[in-house]
Image (cartoon, rainbow, N blue to C red; front, side):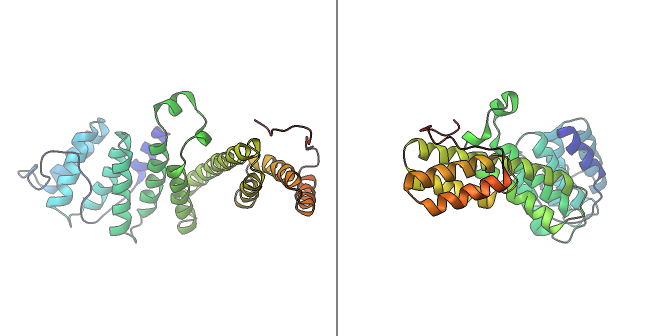
Length: 261
């Protein structure tokens, strides 16, 4: 994925104004004072190509502060987002992306900032264990996952023809499935502890909000079983009708006290 991001970043064209977050102890206003804007920018790009991301960030931030209206400054601000992302400093990448969106809402490259914000929010939630061993994200706190989904959705809605939109849509499908699985897990938790009203509500919300997710079929089963436990015959039959219409081969095991897992 990062190689893909690198190729996308290399394709971005730019122009513009102003600055982002810094991890450097040197004041950007004082750095590289003996160099021209073009020199700072060129050496920043060279550092980026050499994967010297900290040096690239220092140079681009210095350019941003010292030459806020320079020809290369908008480009430098986009490279700052990318460099923070490659350093795995995702919160700083998000802050830099949000700043670019705020300052340059009409930029022809603002879609890239939206995309990188979504990617950075996504990886902010994924620790080393998840990335190495693909631990189920549905068991985690999904605050950042929800934010990432919203980020990508905003890109898709605002820029339907952007070259980043197909990738963003793929992330949205994956994240939708993660969020749906999470709702299912919570619903099962309530059901297995005989909190049937809570399990029915969770399952109903899953079915309503995450249409198309694989977890919907299990959510419908959970609704049917929860309503039966609550003695709500009409709601049970309504949910069963929807289940049978959409998934005719699925059966409900009423004899089991537990659902799925």
